[in-house]
Length: 341
Image (tube, rainbow, N blue to C red):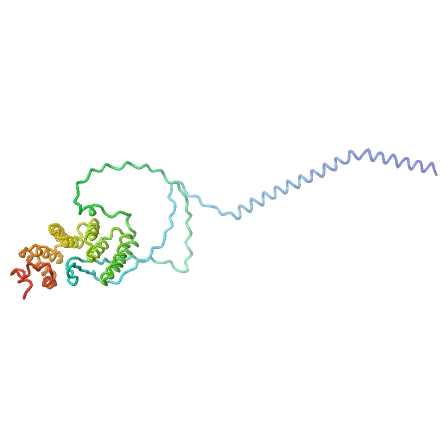
């Protein structure tokens, strides 16, 4: 038995040695196979992740339409603002006089009318919404400014014409600004008739800021200054109105009346004659010319203009019966014949 046991133990020892000799060769092969499997799985995972990412990007991101080169960018239009339409009223008239305000025969205020903006038809309620245009940013081309042309020196102007030679600065007003300015002028005329002169000035200043080309606003502002006996300011504002429209007969008449209050009779006659050239049917201008000549004692010329004023404005006879401007010539035959007993 001992021999058999020894033989078995020897065989086990040889088998153990043989197995130990084979281990160094089997272990690297198993490790190599495991690493190859890992790299294969990692590669497949990476390819799958990239494919999923590309698919999600193509699914969620919207395409941006391209704009052909050389075309202008789209501009979004806005709905027009509503224009306030005033109540139909005639021209307001405010006549002021530094001696007798109740007769007030020397200036007139004009109330402008508002333009009517055509209404815009709205789309039906069940119509689909319009697509929103895509704004594109286009670089602006560089512009080279040419040097300004040489301007010849202007001739020397009279001090009173300095303001009239330059039109009010500022860009052209929009239709909405023009409509708002005209509405302010109407409110100012109502305030002036109610003797709220400070409020009238505030409204008119707002009007000329909105629309620097509103000649009626300047004319009305000059009339308020005239009513406050601020004649120099009235002259400056009348000149601004005439800078916009030199043939504006009402502002020209009011300017001549203001010069008359400053005893500048020659300048008053000059402006009143220009007013008649612009509008020969303006009865108030004939009356103011009659007042100027009556102040100077020229009863014949005063009667001539007064007769024309009465023919166009019958109320002029009532004005002249108590107007202090006719105090020197009221008792003369030619004037007494027009005024009556």
